[in-house]
Image (tube, rainbow, N blue to C red):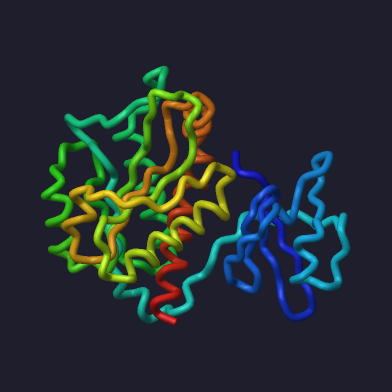
Length: 265
């Protein structure tokens, strides 16, 4: 499951950091450390020496207090009102996608659940959000792309779950098309990757290139996100928890907000 997130505040700056993560938000900017700067020792979070470079007043072993999960706020409240986001729940209807080993989790249902949570998170922050499907219906790849184009969307994010014959494999992957001329695509992929890395304690399998139809033929910046491998028993158990699904959805949404703040800054 997701571990606690902590905030360390100095007089003129702050760090928001997840225990046992390589990433931290230093004054609102994502930074990657060579080693985990905050670890849980006997259940209590302690700052290690790798964080001292950013916060001179800290000493190794400093104890910090827990706060609720922290997500970024939208900076430009005017532009967000006209920013159109298409969230595409993978599969649906006659196409179930993959499933967990015990068959209790079906990809088409899980992607819809999480996409609706992303929709809710972003709408509350002022975005115009559209789901390619809002129920269990069959939708062709061509229809998904056409839907996005008809809206003149600003970005397109397709949500999927992964599978493997190796039941030990886990982690998220983000796909972009093979030939990228629009730098915004790489930027979107990078920020969603950072959102997932920062908020989820799961392996980061990186950004990969593959010409999936929905991202190859999209007119706007588009990515396909493989959230994790539900063929892994531990992962499947996590995804049966509503709170975990919401944390995953919010992590994706947080990456989208990072992207929006960057391109509208």
